[in-house]
Amino acid sequence: MTPAAAFDTGGGTRYDKGKRNGRKKARGLYINTFNDAMKARFGRKTYRLSLDCGFTCPNRDGTAGVGGCIFCSAGGAGNFAGRGESLDEMLAAAKEKIKSKTRGDCRYIAYFQSFSNTYAPPEALRALFSGAIAREDIAALSIATRPDCLPPQTLALLAELNEKKPVWVELGLQTANDGTARRMNRCYPTAVYDAAVRALHERGLEVVTHIMLGLPGETRADMRETVRHAASLGTEGVKLHLTQVLKGTVLAGMYERGEFDVMPLEEYAALLCDLIERLPRETVLHRYTGDGDKKELLAPLWCGDKKRVLNYINGVFRERDVEQGSKY
Image 1: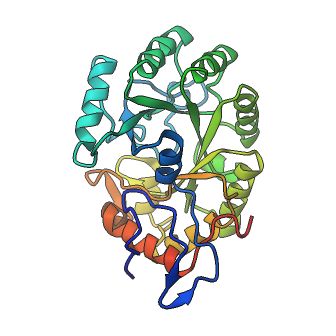
Image 2 (image 1 turned 180 degrees about the horizontal axis):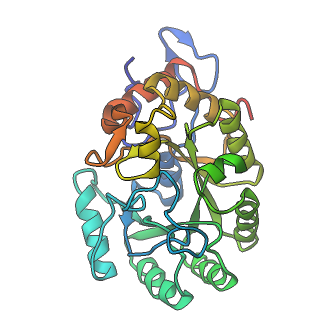
């Protein structure tokens, strides 16, 4: 299957509404992608700068649990993030990693990615986040964290910064099924996510919800329910991730013992079509696939070729006339 010429294989796009193969399209063929949403919001191409600021997680240090979630590697999802002794060094390192993609008059989003990026004293967070938001080339802050790491002082700080530039908080829900959550050692019930979303919305902050597809024991109905649950709380954005098996994780041991299997690309693409159509039209789809560090990736090996994967998925979207919101 080949992608349409209009696709941006760097992250999807909103599709044209013209004719295909000499016939009028039956549906809108529409997905509210990150690329399009950022262009509309900031008036130019906008890139994420992934940062690793040396945070940890309450699910690792014993506060909430130990060992972390069963899928989380030693890098805490920050294998491709910029590192350094100072914020300037981290931002410079992150820009260097994406310089082959950037062009023209672009802007950046400071994406605090690794581990739980509100799990620190508010004064330390203020220095870090204020330093990023003050830079002219930074259009917004995106802060990845756990919903149990948002005390009142931190919420107040984020609301204050949001008055200067947009701030959105990325919450690692992964699943709304508390049984699955216990098996993956998430160490908080879904009700904590619900309360965090409400608290952030009360302060005018936007939420991006991470949802992991293909967790051991999850059915398609479970994954649909997670998408429905996040949408019902008004999450402004969604990141859909395939479950990847990384070396050194608890999940890797389960996989090697044959306790579960990973999705083939064809099944994953079909699932995405179904789930995206269940999202409200205004929800921004920040991501619908990811490429794990090839040095750590055990399975599925197909996700290591991001460009080919995006080409295939985008081709399936076009073939099926995917219209976000059509099943919402």
